[in-house]
Length: 222
Image (cartoon, rainbow, N blue to C red; front, side, top):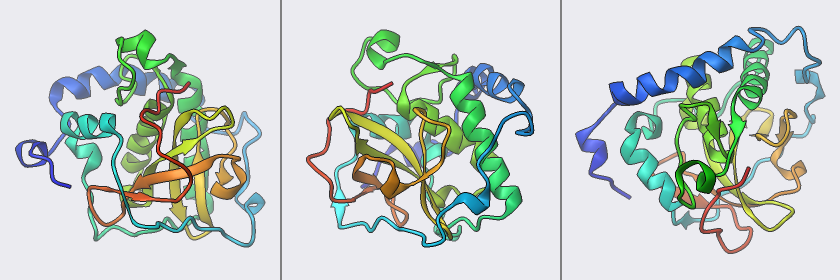
């Protein structure tokens, strides 16, 4: 899929960057380290990694298309980046820390309450957001910390209530791991209890199917 916005803009606008500062400041003001919390350890991950296999192409969430038009730098795909994250103690510490800080810093609010629309994706610039906004901010911060964006894919799932939900899948050498705003635990994808529908492709600005069920129209879920 091609978007004209990618040829017109190749970075987050100055205005958007300025709006992002409150959310970033809040995230970084909460526990600059993870020593004060009981964090997961790298050794706690399963010894037999599990990978979710793409099954073909899928239609993107409409709100993601608009997000990519407004924040093209967040959707850039560099195929020279690693397809998987090599988890070291330092990398794992960064992932755990950013996941916890964003979950604590962003206040949950549905898009209908926030923007009076069913589904809108952004970077929680004002400190409020729903599921996808948490995950997009996490990816933004993790990419700034040096992790390959190509190995961090926005993913659409269906939760236990049958509602559309967005998580961030980290494709790692220890399997596909999920960052979620509903828990601070970072879980292998097959242990989340979610039905995995689709995620961003690693090879194009597009989406791939993960099987699951009929795709939800929105992911507007706290």
